[in-house]
Length: 262
Image 1 (cartoon, helix red, strand yellow):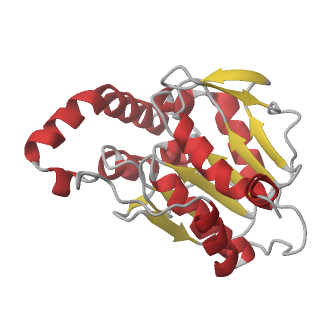
Image 2 (cartoon, one colour):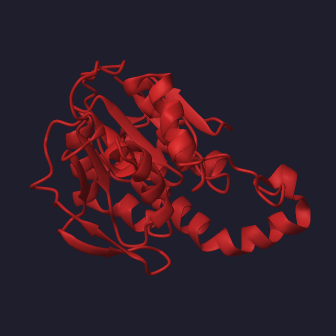
Protein backbone atom coordinates (compact mmCIF):
# COMPACT_ATOMS: atom_id res chain seq x y z
CA UNK A 1 0.00 0.00 0.00
CA UNK A 2 1.59 3.29 -1.07
CA UNK A 3 1.60 6.51 0.92
CA UNK A 4 -1.47 8.06 -0.68
CA UNK A 5 -3.44 4.81 -0.57
CA UNK A 6 -2.76 4.63 3.17
CA UNK A 7 -2.75 8.23 4.31
CA UNK A 8 -5.05 9.87 1.79
CA UNK A 9 -7.13 6.83 1.13
CA UNK A 10 -29.01 15.71 27.59
CA UNK A 11 -27.81 19.02 28.96
CA UNK A 12 -27.53 22.17 31.06
CA UNK A 13 -27.34 25.77 29.84
CA UNK A 14 -29.36 25.27 26.68
CA UNK A 15 -30.65 28.83 26.89
CA UNK A 16 -27.12 29.98 26.12
CA UNK A 17 -27.42 28.81 22.57
CA UNK A 18 -30.99 29.59 21.64
CA UNK A 19 -32.86 26.51 22.79
CA UNK A 20 -32.54 22.82 23.55
CA UNK A 21 -30.22 20.62 21.54
CA UNK A 22 -31.00 16.92 21.30
CA UNK A 23 -28.07 14.54 21.74
CA UNK A 24 -28.50 11.08 20.24
CA UNK A 25 -26.21 9.46 22.80
CA UNK A 26 -23.81 10.29 25.57
CA UNK A 27 -21.26 7.73 24.39
CA UNK A 28 -19.93 7.32 20.85
CA UNK A 29 -21.68 4.67 18.83
CA UNK A 30 -19.49 2.05 17.23
CA UNK A 31 -18.02 2.67 13.80
CA UNK A 32 -17.46 -0.29 11.46
CA UNK A 33 -13.84 -1.42 11.46
CA UNK A 34 -13.93 -2.82 7.94
CA UNK A 35 -15.38 0.01 5.85
CA UNK A 36 -14.78 3.64 5.01
CA UNK A 37 -15.35 6.14 7.79
CA UNK A 38 -17.86 8.87 6.83
CA UNK A 39 -16.25 12.22 7.63
CA UNK A 40 -17.40 15.81 7.08
CA UNK A 41 -14.96 18.67 7.71
CA UNK A 42 -16.41 22.18 7.85
CA UNK A 43 -14.84 24.97 5.80
CA UNK A 44 -15.68 28.65 6.28
CA UNK A 45 -14.13 32.01 5.37
CA UNK A 46 -11.29 32.81 7.74
CA UNK A 47 -10.65 29.24 8.94
CA UNK A 48 -7.07 28.25 9.67
CA UNK A 49 -5.96 25.97 6.85
CA UNK A 50 -3.66 23.85 9.01
CA UNK A 51 -6.55 23.09 11.37
CA UNK A 52 -8.13 21.27 8.41
CA UNK A 53 -5.19 20.01 6.41
CA UNK A 54 -3.31 18.33 9.26
CA UNK A 55 -6.26 16.19 10.42
CA UNK A 56 -7.37 15.60 6.82
CA UNK A 57 -3.94 14.17 5.99
CA UNK A 58 -4.17 11.62 8.79
CA UNK A 59 -7.89 10.79 8.59
CA UNK A 60 -8.22 10.60 4.80
CA UNK A 61 -6.74 7.11 4.81
CA UNK A 62 -9.76 5.98 6.84
CA UNK A 63 -12.21 7.57 4.43
CA UNK A 64 -11.50 6.67 0.80
CA UNK A 65 -14.29 8.33 -1.15
CA UNK A 66 -16.18 9.26 2.02
CA UNK A 67 -14.48 12.43 3.30
CA UNK A 68 -16.31 15.64 2.43
CA UNK A 69 -15.07 19.19 2.84
CA UNK A 70 -18.30 21.09 3.50
CA UNK A 71 -19.19 24.78 3.30
CA UNK A 72 -22.30 26.88 2.80
CA UNK A 73 -21.53 26.70 -0.92
CA UNK A 74 -19.28 24.26 -2.76
CA UNK A 75 -16.09 25.66 -4.23
CA UNK A 76 -13.02 27.55 -2.97
CA UNK A 77 -13.10 28.94 0.57
CA UNK A 78 -10.37 31.36 1.67
CA UNK A 79 -8.51 30.68 4.91
CA UNK A 80 -7.34 33.36 7.34
CA UNK A 81 -4.03 33.63 5.47
CA UNK A 82 -5.64 33.71 2.02
CA UNK A 83 -4.92 30.07 1.12
CA UNK A 84 -8.10 28.60 -0.34
CA UNK A 85 -9.41 25.10 0.27
CA UNK A 86 -12.10 23.62 -1.96
CA UNK A 87 -15.43 22.56 -0.50
CA UNK A 88 -16.71 19.42 -2.19
CA UNK A 89 -20.22 19.63 -0.71
CA UNK A 90 -22.62 22.18 0.72
CA UNK A 91 -24.95 21.92 3.70
CA UNK A 92 -27.66 20.25 1.61
CA UNK A 93 -25.48 17.74 -0.23
CA UNK A 94 -23.34 16.74 2.76
CA UNK A 95 -24.24 13.19 3.87
CA UNK A 96 -26.72 13.27 6.74
CA UNK A 97 -25.36 10.32 8.69
CA UNK A 98 -21.71 10.78 9.65
CA UNK A 99 -19.13 8.94 11.67
CA UNK A 100 -17.05 12.09 12.26
CA UNK A 101 -18.16 15.72 12.18
CA UNK A 102 -15.19 18.11 12.37
CA UNK A 103 -14.91 21.89 12.87
CA UNK A 104 -11.67 23.88 12.51
CA UNK A 105 -10.82 27.18 14.16
CA UNK A 106 -9.48 30.42 12.77
CA UNK A 107 -9.94 34.17 12.63
CA UNK A 108 -13.40 33.64 11.12
CA UNK A 109 -14.63 31.87 14.27
CA UNK A 110 -16.68 34.78 15.72
CA UNK A 111 -18.67 35.14 12.49
CA UNK A 112 -19.42 31.42 12.45
CA UNK A 113 -20.55 31.56 16.08
CA UNK A 114 -23.30 33.90 14.87
CA UNK A 115 -24.06 32.17 11.57
CA UNK A 116 -27.47 30.55 12.01
CA UNK A 117 -27.18 28.33 8.92
CA UNK A 118 -23.83 26.94 10.05
CA UNK A 119 -25.04 26.36 13.59
CA UNK A 120 -28.20 24.62 12.34
CA UNK A 121 -26.12 22.41 10.05
CA UNK A 122 -23.84 21.40 12.92
CA UNK A 123 -26.73 20.64 15.27
CA UNK A 124 -28.42 18.51 12.63
CA UNK A 125 -25.38 16.42 11.72
CA UNK A 126 -24.14 16.16 15.32
CA UNK A 127 -27.40 14.58 16.39
CA UNK A 128 -26.50 11.47 14.37
CA UNK A 129 -22.71 11.57 14.25
CA UNK A 130 -20.63 9.02 16.13
CA UNK A 131 -17.98 11.64 16.92
CA UNK A 132 -18.35 15.45 17.13
CA UNK A 133 -14.93 17.05 16.96
CA UNK A 134 -12.92 20.24 16.64
CA UNK A 135 -9.47 21.77 16.60
CA UNK A 136 -8.49 25.13 18.08
CA UNK A 137 -11.32 27.69 18.22
CA UNK A 138 -13.57 25.29 16.33
CA UNK A 139 -14.75 24.25 19.79
CA UNK A 140 -16.28 27.72 20.21
CA UNK A 141 -18.37 27.15 17.09
CA UNK A 142 -19.53 23.80 18.46
CA UNK A 143 -20.28 25.57 21.74
CA UNK A 144 -22.28 28.29 20.01
CA UNK A 145 -24.34 25.52 18.40
CA UNK A 146 -25.11 24.14 21.87
CA UNK A 147 -23.02 21.04 21.35
CA UNK A 148 -20.59 21.37 24.26
CA UNK A 149 -22.95 22.27 27.13
CA UNK A 150 -21.92 20.08 30.06
CA UNK A 151 -18.90 18.65 28.24
CA UNK A 152 -15.23 18.96 29.12
CA UNK A 153 -13.45 20.66 26.25
CA UNK A 154 -10.36 22.53 25.17
CA UNK A 155 -9.53 25.21 22.64
CA UNK A 156 -6.73 27.63 21.78
CA UNK A 157 -5.21 28.89 25.04
CA UNK A 158 -6.19 32.49 24.25
CA UNK A 159 -9.93 31.73 24.50
CA UNK A 160 -10.19 28.42 26.36
CA UNK A 161 -10.79 29.65 29.90
CA UNK A 162 -12.57 32.91 29.02
CA UNK A 163 -15.02 31.80 26.32
CA UNK A 164 -15.79 28.09 26.70
CA UNK A 165 -17.60 28.58 30.06
CA UNK A 166 -19.88 31.18 28.44
CA UNK A 167 -20.97 28.39 26.08
CA UNK A 168 -21.66 25.87 28.86
CA UNK A 169 -18.45 23.86 28.46
CA UNK A 170 -15.94 22.95 31.16
CA UNK A 171 -12.50 24.17 30.01
CA UNK A 172 -9.59 21.74 30.27
CA UNK A 173 -5.93 22.60 29.74
CA UNK A 174 -5.01 19.54 27.70
CA UNK A 175 -3.80 18.92 24.17
CA UNK A 176 -6.71 16.64 23.22
CA UNK A 177 -9.86 16.13 25.31
CA UNK A 178 -12.27 13.21 24.93
CA UNK A 179 -15.62 13.48 26.73
CA UNK A 180 -18.09 10.84 25.62
CA UNK A 181 -18.42 11.41 21.85
CA UNK A 182 -16.96 14.91 21.88
CA UNK A 183 -13.30 15.37 20.96
CA UNK A 184 -11.72 18.80 21.10
CA UNK A 185 -8.10 19.78 20.53
CA UNK A 186 -6.03 22.79 21.51
CA UNK A 187 -4.55 25.32 19.10
CA UNK A 188 -3.59 24.69 15.45
CA UNK A 189 -0.69 22.24 15.78
CA UNK A 190 -2.76 20.01 18.09
CA UNK A 191 -4.74 18.93 15.02
CA UNK A 192 -2.23 16.17 14.28
CA UNK A 193 -2.41 14.89 17.86
CA UNK A 194 -6.22 14.94 17.63
CA UNK A 195 -6.25 13.02 14.35
CA UNK A 196 -3.89 10.33 15.62
CA UNK A 197 -5.85 9.94 18.87
CA UNK A 198 -9.13 9.65 16.97
CA UNK A 199 -7.62 7.25 14.41
CA UNK A 200 -6.56 5.03 17.31
CA UNK A 201 -10.16 4.98 18.58
CA UNK A 202 -11.46 4.16 15.10
CA UNK A 203 -8.86 1.63 13.90
CA UNK A 204 -6.57 0.82 16.79
CA UNK A 205 -3.26 2.06 18.11
CA UNK A 206 -1.11 0.26 15.52
CA UNK A 207 -2.99 1.96 12.70
CA UNK A 208 -2.38 5.33 14.33
CA UNK A 209 1.28 4.55 14.94
CA UNK A 210 1.70 3.59 11.30
CA UNK A 211 0.05 6.83 10.22
CA UNK A 212 2.38 8.76 12.49
CA UNK A 213 5.43 7.07 10.99
CA UNK A 214 4.24 7.57 7.41
CA UNK A 215 3.80 11.27 8.21
CA UNK A 216 7.18 11.29 10.02
CA UNK A 217 5.48 13.14 12.83
CA UNK A 218 8.32 13.40 15.34
CA UNK A 219 8.19 17.06 16.40
CA UNK A 220 11.33 18.71 17.73
CA UNK A 221 10.47 22.42 17.68
CA UNK A 222 13.44 24.80 17.60
CA UNK A 223 12.01 26.75 20.56
CA UNK A 224 10.16 25.82 23.74
CA UNK A 225 7.50 28.51 23.35
CA UNK A 226 4.33 26.58 22.62
CA UNK A 227 2.45 27.68 25.74
CA UNK A 228 2.31 30.93 27.72
CA UNK A 229 4.07 29.25 30.64
CA UNK A 230 6.93 28.10 28.44
CA UNK A 231 7.15 31.27 26.34
CA UNK A 232 7.27 33.69 29.26
CA UNK A 233 5.64 37.10 29.81
CA UNK A 234 7.26 39.10 26.99
CA UNK A 235 6.50 36.59 24.23
CA UNK A 236 3.02 35.98 25.62
CA UNK A 237 2.33 39.72 25.55
CA UNK A 238 3.37 39.86 21.89
CA UNK A 239 1.12 36.89 21.06
CA UNK A 240 -1.76 38.43 23.01
CA UNK A 241 -1.55 41.53 20.84
CA UNK A 242 -1.82 39.43 17.67
CA UNK A 243 -4.69 37.36 19.04
CA UNK A 244 -6.62 40.24 20.66
CA UNK A 245 -9.14 40.75 17.80
CA UNK A 246 -9.99 37.04 17.76
CA UNK A 247 -10.44 36.97 21.55
CA UNK A 248 -12.61 40.11 21.55
CA UNK A 249 -14.72 38.80 18.68
CA UNK A 250 -15.21 35.39 20.27
CA UNK A 251 -16.17 36.90 23.63
CA UNK A 252 -18.70 39.21 21.96
CA UNK A 253 -20.17 36.36 19.91
CA UNK A 254 -20.47 34.12 22.97
CA UNK A 255 -22.21 36.88 24.91
CA UNK A 256 -24.54 37.53 21.98
CA UNK A 257 -25.47 33.84 21.91
CA UNK A 258 -26.23 33.95 25.65
CA UNK A 259 -28.80 36.70 24.96
CA UNK A 260 -30.48 34.77 22.13
CA UNK A 261 -33.99 33.78 23.25
CA UNK A 262 -34.99 30.12 23.11
